Image 1: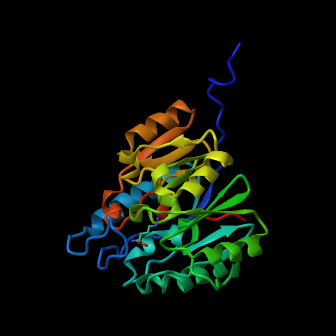
Image 2 (image 1 turned 120 degrees about the vertical axis):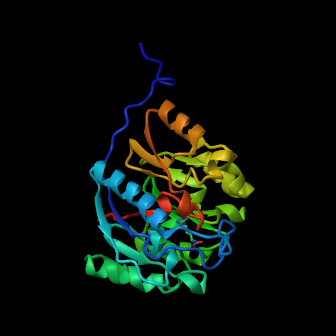
Length: 276
Ligand code: ARG
């Protein structure tokens, strides 16, 4: 007889449809998060090669990968997760906090329109899937550094879904997708120290079985990962996270995006899920 509490559950992969942006103009020329050091050199061709491995990994997993054309002068456009939030065929556009990234909002909305999504132009500041994560049919919504809390109300009105607001308190984990990883339809992994006490209580109540990651793994943006329910593409340096995922019956796949980490982003930041 198997002990239900210790048995590894069978995981099911569901092929994803995602939007990505090749980092042809990637560099670090301004500083809007603590990871960015404009005085240090970056290697755009290395960024493209590393990004290409991620792109190919998704293709190998059978994902449908769409590409948006990069725009010169928008070095952060590679972080497609921030370009909007797309579920129920509705694309809620992004409205960026910092002027350096503001032109990305309309660029992504044009792409969504062309692709046939019902685009909602945002009234409130928000950075898309960087701060909005779908799990268990509800939307986890981050605030504190980028996305404004009144956008949480806006998104609740648009989708008619439950929205759970979470307060981020560590500037290194300035987007929700740097502090929470969605593992499958019902469970997450997170870094407790990234949240205030109230939000932590909420996370503990909603996800009693969550994976808790180490500070070391979070510090290489290990949580910034993308799952299809079984395969989870993670930062190859996040070793303990990898071990925990394997123990739980997932299949972690490590990729090295060290160059894109210089801009403060990882796997998930480069990935926007499109849900019809
Ligand atoms: N340099 C970008 C910024 O600070 C990185 C964005 C990372 N994206 C993410 N989804 N966490 O806005």
